[in-house]
Length: 373
Ligand SMILES: *[C@@H]1O[C@H](CO)[C@@H](O)[C@H](O)[C@H]1NC(C)=O
Ligand SMILES: *[C@@H]1O[C@H](CO)[C@@H](O)[C@H](O)[C@H]1NC(C)=O
Ligand SMILES: *[C@@H]1O[C@H](CO)[C@@H](O)[C@H](O)[C@H]1NC(C)=O
Ligand SMILES: *[C@@H]1O[C@H](CO)[C@@H](O)[C@H](O)[C@H]1NC(C)=O
Image 1: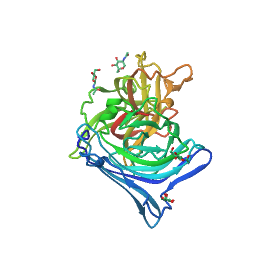
Image 2: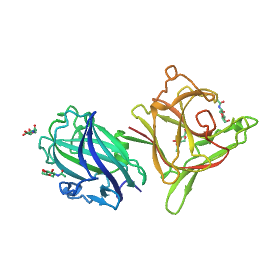
Image 3: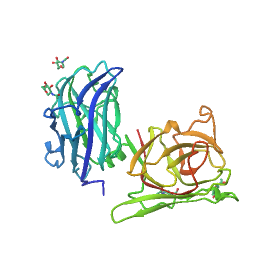
Image 4: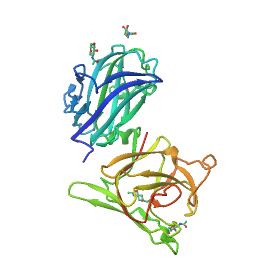
């Protein structure tokens, strides 16, 4: 459904962009700008089959002002397509390390791209310098996205130019923002930015997810199940848990799935979810090659599900800590083998790292779980 011929209406509220080292240099401050006249659209409609649209506009309320980047992405069947805006600049950022953008996204696209050009080279046949980033989809807080200047890579007509001329950060002459087509398929083809681990909006196969709860022990009384919810409008998975710890707070309830993922090129496991019920704190549990015994070490990380709106939570792979029977082990001696993640689980318990959890029923609604950079 989202793969091709996608029509997405996307909104990114941008409050400012600035270059950062120790000092900050404001590149464009939408909270104070009187207009956005210097920005112009550059979308795939420069090519014959293009059908996309972008507009950058100032939103001025009684209380605040910011920029909104509206896009309508209508990719070609092969996923090609983009919608963007750009602005001429005369920036010398050679003394800076990052470009920061304070933003949030709404709608169904969280993948954006900053496109820089240098030395006045602005035609379609000139090299552009690009970096993709993900914006949390939320109607709440803004996040600050940090784009290292050294990560802008040369591109020619959508393809990275290996060993191309590097960006001259002292002479940046165009700054552009883009959403781009395909959204899912190009990532799968190139495996660059995102790998979908589980997309419950598009599969109803969850029989691989099995329960592993304290009922494996005589005194256990908890229960968990992962099911697909299909409404008239959406589809997603729900992890229902009934957590019944013993008086000494022992107990757990979990679901897990055998996998065969190599995540060594990624930095995060990202989950789009929402929590309801008594517990909002969950642990994601990873096992790697060689961990077979149920009582062996696992790698865990706690996260708090957002309560009202679905949002995207990024769990740094580096923060999965080794545990043995609830006790944390030294990470140096027990590194996670990212090349062979053999099991992923979601768990509710009351371990030392989840002291706030309570007995009762909770639901974690999950759209998808991805590996991201
Ligand atoms: C717009 O461009 C003009 C000419 O390049 C420049 O003087 C002006 O500062 C720019 N305005 C903003 C808000 O960047
Ligand atoms: C930027 O590059 C252009 C083209 O090489 C050159 O004409 C211009 O003088 C440069 N500007 C600066 C500030 O170095
Ligand atoms: C379920 O597991 C089987 C066997 O391990 C695997 O072939 C299949 O791809 C899995 N399905 C999903 C949806 O993960
Ligand atoms: C781990 O526990 C599950 C559920 O009780 C059981 O089916 C499986 O055989 C156990 N694995 C091993 C290696 O003991």
